[in-house]
Structure formats: C-alpha cells, structure tokens
Length: 189
Image (cartoon, rainbow, N blue to C red; front, top):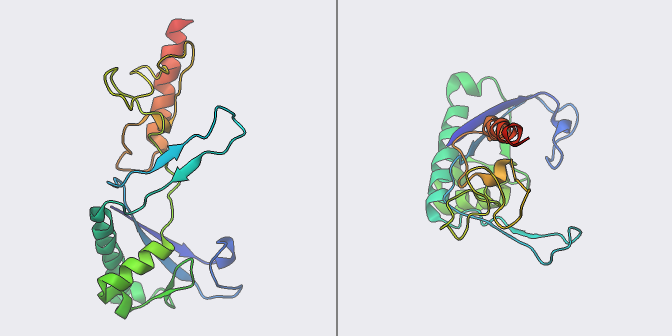
C-alpha cells in the first residue's frame, strides 16, 4: 500500500472534481495498491492495428484487494483527522462522483466499499501484457532478453514485459528494463 498526499491550491487543475475557482486549499490523500492480486485482461479483436482492444480492468476481483483498500482509506481518514493535520485543510473529502466521504461512510464497510468502487481509478502503471517468462510458460510472450517468441528481430522493452507489477511506481523499473534492453541490442550489432 502506498499512501499519497497532495496539497492542492488550484483545484481547477483537476478535471472532474466539483469545485470552482477560489475554493480554499485542500489536502488530498488516497491509498494505492502497489501489488494488487486482481488481474485484468486485454483482448485483441483482430490483427489490425486500427482495431481497439478490449481492456477489462477487473478492479477488486480479488476480495483481498478491497480489504486492503478499506484499511488504506481508513488510515488516510485517520491521518487527515489528526489535530495537527486537520488544522491545515478545510472541507470534506470528495471523490470523482461528488460523493462526500464522511465519518458514517468510513465506519461502514458496505458504504466505504461503495465509495471506493465509485471513485477508484488507475495509477497509470499498467504492466504485464507481454509477460516475460520461460519457454514452458504458456502466458509468456517474451524470453529473458525481451525477444518476442516466434517473431524474429522483434523485442518488447517496456513495462509490459513485467510478469507482475513492482511494489512501487514503475518509472525506475522501466528505465532499468530500457537500459538493459539497449545493452543487449549493442552486443548484437
């Protein structure tokens, strides 16, 4: 779990939030699952690059993910309501659906799960659509050198080769994959 805290002065920077210019400063806190158990699915409809794939995110398909989010939301609520922190921000926590998070919602598993489902979003760290793995892994698309199995001369060198998401933001891991891939390409030239 990663807890992110953001202080926003200009709320107009965030599209979808029901606040206007002149709104007092807010402190935004949200928990993020860094290693969700739930798995999504990407399905191709044809070999045409113009045909958009179907992406099924499957958030909270594994009940343990929701349990962790409940704990994370309650921890964020507790931190935001500590006297020294609470003195620095004003107003309720409002999600993308304009639903207000209040003490009654936080106290109820069902209400908090509803809030989470209605306000959940991606961290834009998708991985694993071109999984790296051994030859005997039917789900592995690339080998240990990021070479696509069955397609000579093609490599995939990005976050999609990660068999599982890392327990952090993916940026540094992607840089490492790119650096390693470039090393392999240099040795082949």
